[in-house]
Length: 80
Figure 1 (cartoon, rainbow, N blue to C red):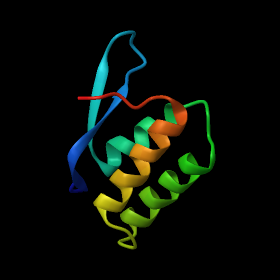
Figure 2: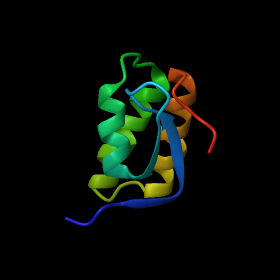
Figure 3: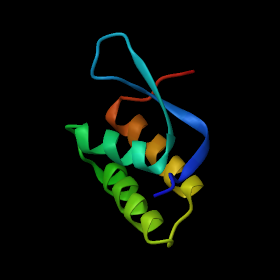
Figure 4: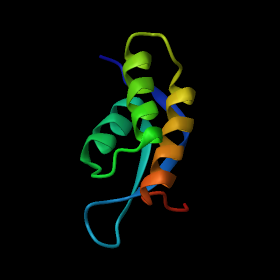
């Protein structure tokens, strides 16, 4: 299965203190979203767009935008 890439990466806090992770594909975004404790409206939108992208109903760039917004909502977004 090919990965659904997007650019530029979205940089988020890692579960390891002081480590930043760059996410550059839908599969990675989905894995990160599942780890987060807070699951607000932007999280739900990002998860739904991941599912939609896997079904060819959304683009990887749509997922990237939603993932970045969810990361802001969660307090996980980092600068690069």
